[in-house]
Amino acid sequence: MSDTTPNIGEMLLATVPMARTLNLEVVEATAERAVLRLPDQEGFHNHVGGPHAGAMFTLGESASGAIVIGAFGDQMGRAVPLAVKAEIGYRKLALGVVTATATLGRPRAEVVAELDAGQRPEFPVLVEITREDGAVTGEMTITWTLRPHA
Image 1: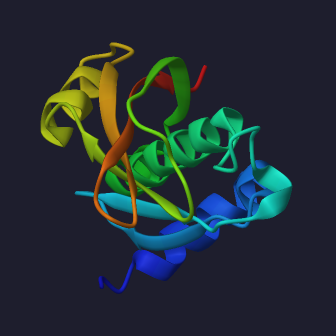
Image 2: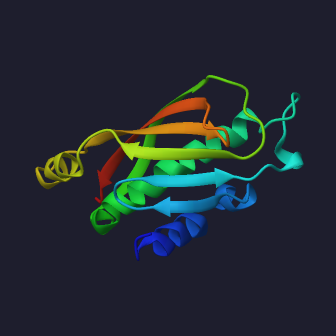
């Protein structure tokens, strides 16, 4: 793990109360990839015994936020990261522990170059949610922006 992993994870958990509410675990969080885990918790189960769709959405969105912090944390002095839209597809029944892995959908350098040019860049974060057996239970795309400070 990177030396920055605890800082990104701590920042995410400190600024996103819902991530703490769900007891999300930050497994890895760097500028290249973020991996978060949702423990199997009966209080967050749905009618078929797996994690509720809302809990899975929060897991994926939180993983996307972790990679945004990792990739663009050095830009927060001049811009605030904001989720613009999100889409999720539920592929298979999720049971037990589920893990979300997030990656940037555009190169960091392109996004920063747009910010440098005075634009408000948008970029996708791709998230795959898996069960412990490796089966993909969900896929998300969250579009983020870096809104320059006024």
